[in-house]
Image (tube, rainbow, N blue to C red; front, side, top):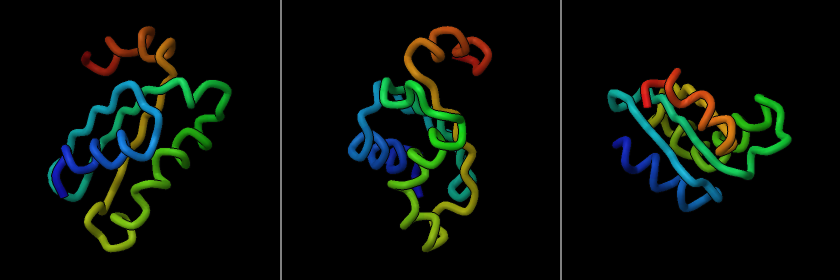
Length: 84
């Protein structure tokens, strides 16, 4: 699976402002930024991002997934820590 495919799935399924995906074809890192994460726990944020990708995880196109989810305000504060 390509990084751009994961980005497209997440942008289409969720109201996100930004998605950054890196990975090697089976292990991926996702940074998702959107107002929809406001007030959510860290676990709930991750569940929200996992949901549209479950079919790809189930058929092993995504073997491992690391998720960081931020509100736009959190992203402004933390983006330098993530190399952006």
